[in-house]
Length: 503
Image (tube, rainbow, N blue to C red; front, side):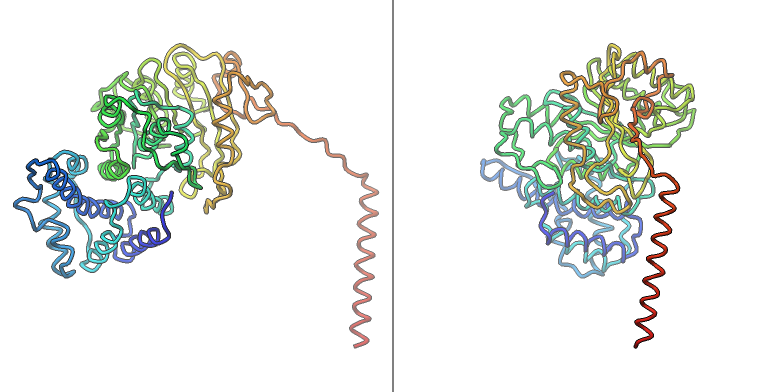
């Protein structure tokens, strides 16, 4: 993330204003901030489109015709007391009613949105900060970074169960799955859209001249122009038929859509739907699935999609089965699961693992340390990489010790890499390397051995621990050393007393 200290300071100030202004729920705060950002972008986009039309000698009808008072430039200079009722009662209803090209991406999910900024002073201060950020004038790189930095506060806030997947973990999974320009990418529990825009940036990186790409200290890519995508049809597909996301929380869908827009994805298909319910009917539609679905959740039995067969209400199991259903044959998935999925003893746990081995090629399992999701969750997790179709012959395991950050609640950066570069390199070279030493970081396990172990997929079942043979001194030698040490201490005390006595 390449943001100047000034920009970060402005965003920090924006959060401070909302927290001190009475909006203590961070999810509500980021939603209200997104509405204001959208209001600012509306006028910026309108001005840009007007200039383009003029340059091309075409007519252009402004979206603000008949609604001039809804322009950001019109009301941003109002007093705080005037601004709050005007934005709440005039501007906000206006943006909920927009149906015009790119502008519809965000506004079409505004049906149940509510403007809840409570204080005139808070609105006035927030508008001033957002105006200074001048988001639309920045490159797509910086626009995306600005919003990501805004979202980064969600992890520290806890989010009432809503939290973001660490972006370096997302990038690792995207690298392992390796989406391409002709893929159709889906996240069935998309949240803020991190997997979707990371896949977009990864694809652009693949098709950008290497000497153009810059990588920042956090491992993110910049200057992604896709100059090797030469067919217009590929660009059309990338923008219109590549990225799909679903979430059952309308707030998360709106936040995710704003994230897509600010990362340059103009036509992301993000929809409000519970993909585990009977409302969702898609199957065998996607070639890539990337996800971190909710852990430890459950769903009402009567609402579970009839096509799901595991006979459980545990969402961490149902989501993986649904992902298998959603993939085309030959499609690939990268998904984060809690460790219990790998070794749970229930019939549903075992059935899912059997499904993964018998109907998919389970290519790899990366066991991650429990601190990866701190401070909001301490559960141990793993990444599953699998391809739908055929069956598994052997599974590649990797035991991740570090992800580049401290594994405590602070998650301070260490080297920002940890084992991740090694994981990516060795996964790509796994077939030629063919590691079998189970004392090492990674190794293959034949599927027969896994089946003989009741389909257990936990790395601890197969990894060999090498114990060092420590030789201790005989007890009488240790006792002699302790007695010598005691004598030295007594002598030192005696010398000190003599020195004190002399004084």
